Image (cartoon, rainbow, N blue to C red; front, side, top):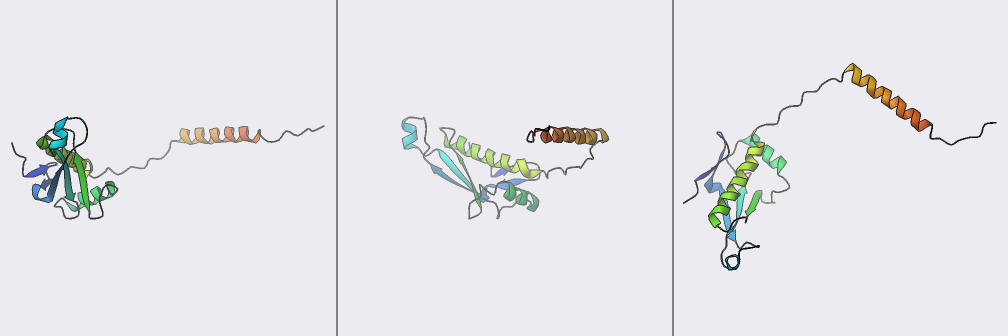
Length: 144
């Protein structure tokens, strides 16, 4: 069983496999002697700036994940959930696809709304009541 030659995000976005770089390392955690012998964990590297995804999606990706992008412009995804190298490769690719899918659609613009007449009145009344409460907190003077 081999992996597909590209990572599908949605109908218009896919990442070719040649843009991805994978390195295999030994994973920590449970697994007995398998952990000490076999390099099953995968480190998936993807250079965002040199990628073939659309420019608007690339800009949103760079903005959203700027803390995870290295100085070389790569994003590194590590997967070591499974004891199988193939399952870890699939998991890392799926995680990358989910990250791109999360920002693939442009965010909806916020439509500004006007507060209702009643809500403005209630807010101003609450402010006035609060101000009166605070003004009563002053020093008590003895007026004879």
